[in-house]
Image (cartoon, rainbow, N blue to C red; front, side, top):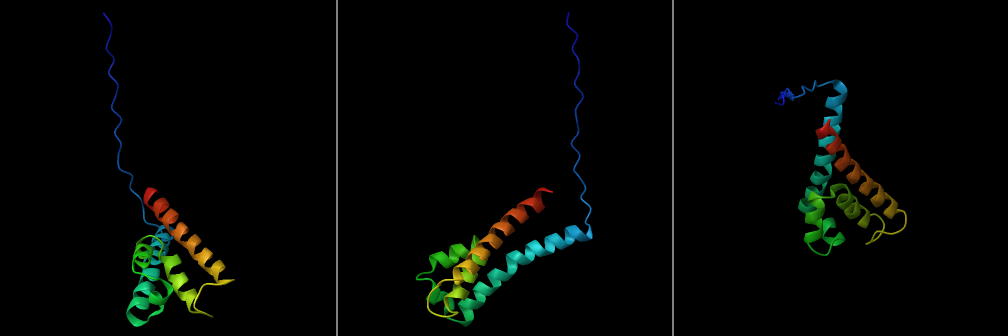
Length: 114
């Protein structure tokens, strides 16, 4: 006869994450990076015509509001700086905003996982 050995169950206990000042600051920075560009897009839409002039329709600003808010807000802002278009150095500012969007997505993913 063969002996049946019993494998002990490993209990996965939920990790208790303690809220430190640094962790709280990272959460505040992450939530702020989600809120402020969206607030600016809504302000562009309500109080001015800059969003309508920068984009031809409503689809791109709507998708940008949910997916790439920093890029959408900065593109609309740069549209009206010197001319009716994004030209020259203004594309560097829009590229930096795209990096902020990527940082927001990656930072949020890291905060949720840790």
